[in-house]
Length: 249
Image (cartoon, rainbow, N blue to C red):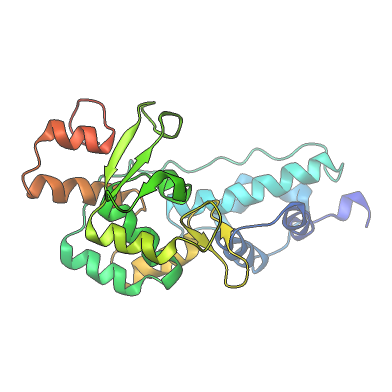
């Protein structure tokens, strides 16, 4: 195909073939492929704003990120002289959100099985997403009902001891043995470590539970909120959560 006739959809195919894509990226690709297919030379910020009108700022920026990545690849391959400058939309600052026990139960009921244990462990321990996904069996002592986060894994650079509730212990017992190292893995035939939580499944579950906009990190806020409601002293909570000595944030 002559360089001048390369289109957005051509660039999206190039982007798709570059490496394995996440379910969320495939979902975005499906939407973009349903849009008009302009020549790359006619791809502009105005075109993006018109075609993606109606999306929230965050969702707009996720779609724009794919378009920009595809355009950059096209430029690398000499299909266009330079990738167009496509401006992101300003996103409102996210607010901290806490689930009630009833809301959590509603969400838990809607989560698919492969996400349910991940979320259960997160809301029971207050661990950050990366700490849950990368937790290894060697970091858990079920007899003592405790886990630990090494300094290099902690945001604050300090080791964290993680008491395990009965719910957290039950989750770990269900998962241990499925993989030689990691606690949480996915796949039916061959278990694989998580790179990130499946965003599409999460978004669909939160929508079904009537909790649209809930972020995975809000499970950590929920854990902290429940501790406060139970009377946990703030200095103790700060130590458990690995927070600097300041209000929860």
